[in-house]
Amino acid sequence: MYRCIAAALAALLCSFAAHAQALRNFPANALRGSLVIGAAPEILLNAQPARLSAGARIRDQANLQPRPASLTGAKLLVHYTVDTQGLVQEVWILTPEEAARKPWPVTLQEARSWQFDPVAQTWTKP
Image: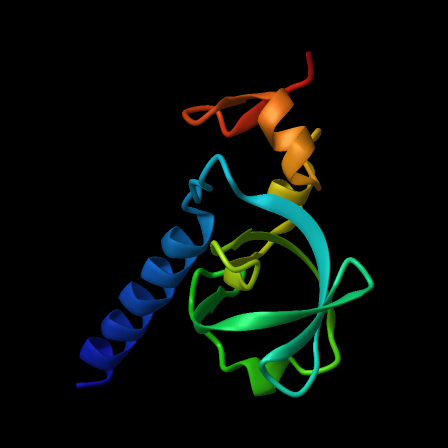
């Protein structure tokens, strides 16, 4: 019985490790910024007041969806997208490997003028 429990636990831990190492693909409209969550839906995005949209999704470094209240006050390096009304729609908290990918646009103007390779998940400045 103990062997079965130990085997199940080992399999579970291996699946978490494999899941955490999976590369995430970000859309071409994802911008990089710093995020501080206040009383949801209020946030600070790049030190400026902003709001999360009603259906906003926040993904942590393991691609899980924590509650915004559990992240209140933390300063996070993120990729994010905005909806047509300018509200923050999707947020990905970056892993150290994702944060090391540079350059990454921080404004819509940069994203429009740079070239994005969706396979390599890299940007090239003109």
